[in-house]
Image (cartoon, rainbow over all chains, first blue to last red; front, side, top):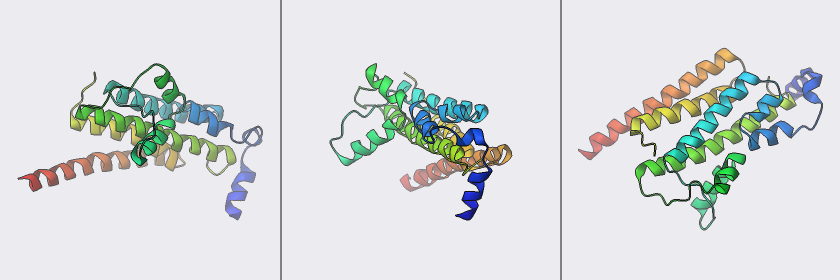
Length: 136
Length: 59
């Protein structure tokens, strides 16, 4: 507890000023944006490339974007998809991922899309931890 | 449509997930790289081992 407070106190002032949840929200909406805001260019670029590529490959494999929540599995899938932020919203707006899953590859693609969303949430939380000084 | 083999899909999955795990779970670049490599080897290695186990069970 005290160690975390010391780390926060040691964080640069430029990092401590401004809206504390901005990197978290930006990182959720656009993969890597939270790290870009904190001037972690290399990390942000690698995170953005990984998450966007995973999402795009999932769609290229004819993966499904969850659109409704009829049962618990669909709710969990929808929550995972929502983790991708704008990628999911733009994909839905463009009508991507609406075909029903008929091939094994399309099932893998659906998992790729869900995992891309979950990885994006992890990276957004990481940006928030850097912002609050819990991580360097 | 992109239709990779099962192994290619596992490798792609491992590369992307390991990159994110490495960056988010460790502090220094060197430790990030090593942890990412560790995660990647676990992803791919466990897929190969489980594949052989399922192959032997199915025989």
